Amino acid sequence: MKSAIVVFPGTNRERDMAIALKRVTGKAPTMVWHRDTQLPDADLIVLPGGFSYGDYLRCGAMAAHSPIMAEIRAFAQKGGHILGVCNGFQILTETGMLPGALLRNANLRFLSQDCTLRVERDDTPYTHKWKKGDVFRTPLAHGDGNYTADAETLARLEGEGRVAFRYASPDGKVQNDDFATNPNGSVNSIAGILSENARICGMMPHPEDLVDPLMGGEDGLPLFEGLVEAIVR
Image 1 (cartoon, helix red, strand yellow):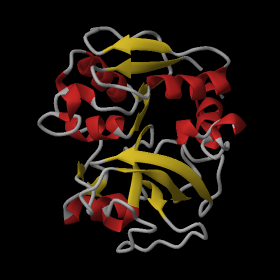
Image 2: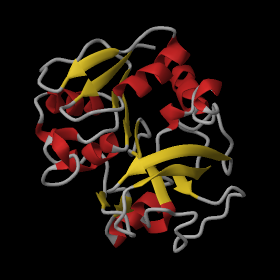
Image 3: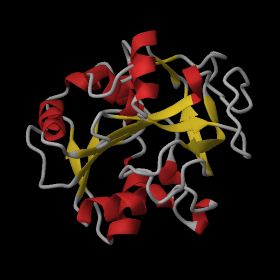
């Protein structure tokens, strides 16, 4: 699998993502600068975490208009696989490639902590190494991770099974109004969603930060292993 990571001014998680991708592919991903106007030959494009453009206007709003985004939209229209994590998720919603928006955390605090996610589907490129209902630990670090969408969009996401991950307790219970299990207050405890064809995934927590025992665990590794299997088979 050939992968590429897009870097914007203020991106700070590209190296973490590169470690995860090299772990499962055996080769370093290509770094793509936001002002480039051509994507390399790649099977997977990743928009990593950070604070693109200093989060001015809204998180991801300025990055959504970077020159490279026209190529990424075209890549998406051709059915390409795109993973957006944290700021990358915010950028995907700002471009309209994923629905909804990420608002300030409900407690109005920047959060940097571990959280627990429940897998809602096990038949997508991003989740098929888990079983539906599995729970795994992953770090989060954001100030604007409170996912929201209008009632019609939310009903469509839920009805079409496009919620990939939800914030949950370690035993898999979802409690929307409990900051202990839904730390940023996201509607329906949504932590990650999918495009209609399930080839684009956006999520706020950082699975790339738990892919090696030296990081404290390998809880996030199944996502990346599953991507390789899904794309190269």
